[in-house]
Length: 501
Image 1 (cartoon, helix red, strand yellow):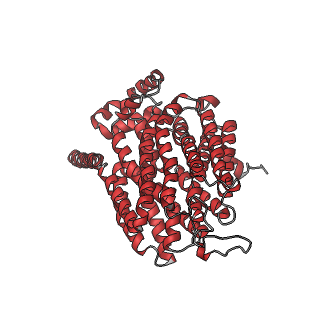
Image 2 (image 1 turned 90 degrees about the vertical axis):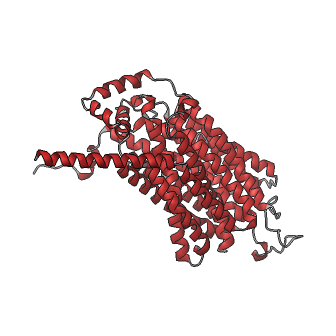
Image 3 (image 1 turned 120 degrees about the vertical axis):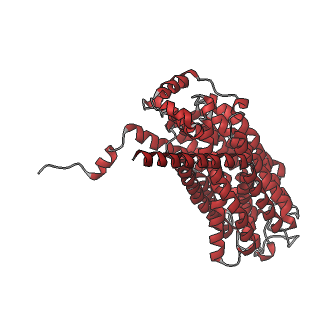
């Protein structure tokens, strides 16, 4: 009897060598940016431990207590202005991140990505660990923690432009919204893992809540150095068809020109242009790409909302629902679970409709009333809290995920670049850098506004969602016009077919 090949072996050999490499790179970059976000999350979990309700904490018998209200707090966060100080720490990181992001994309286009990412992850791990060591070294200086946050913010900017550029080197357009929607779940996965890891140590020794994530991201930096392949050509794989991206964009924008490309002439022209345009695009050149400014300003306000939740949601749950620090951290992960689903759904819908701006706008409009409802009824029961966190997470993080991935990749290969594929990192850095300004403003405003009541914080978030939507109105109008014209052409084609019959 003739032996047959094992099913597992048949499955493995059904994929080409190129496919295995592409899958490997997608997995590696997913792992790298998961580690980046994992190392950012501990500060939001530890906040509720740095300033606690000491009246509910059992006092050690051997401890000489001079102030019963603040004896268990960590100075300098034991004062009434602790929320403002938390806002300062958040902004030390986020302002540095926003500032550094505009330069990071430029470096990412010009430096070897493997070295650049490895250096960034190792240094991020170092500064994350140094924050946690403040617990063991008994450091109570706001300046120390602020400096660590600034340096960590600068090091973290190495991540996003570099991983997007690496993925762009390996993947053509295809179903970009769906693929990048799934891939972008690394953000939420990192937040969830960061919350769980930090929460495991926060009540016993909060320093380990930083040291363990710091060691993890440093380990992935070593992994990056030994295994990342920047370009398919480096391992004799077939590069992606960048010229097909140009054809796809032109199909959406100029139907008359599409008819001229059917004969395949445009493919030859695009290939030549890719070879000619080897220099990276300038900052001003990237800004002039249609849609970059609108999506950047939209992301500013969308990221303001997302990062306010990232840094303040555990404290809000702890204060309003009266959960312990670990329980509040665990509950906040549901927001990120919703964000995973929201990012994938946004990618699917935008792929199907061809309307990136319209998809973002609808989700942002739906998020505003959901945030209002969460603030008023979200803490009534455990089931309500879970449902509202999942729903708000999907609606808030969906547009944010779509803009930072599929939209950035679309604009980085816009037809105005005429085949220059070395704009992706710069365009991504501009969009995400502008969004990071909002990421810095959100937690700062939350720190200033929260003493007046959490209701006012949610009014601020709702206003930001509406403003984000307004910046997309021109692009939404353009997409709706395109859909209308396509519908008219279909009707004309149907009439022609009927007359021929």
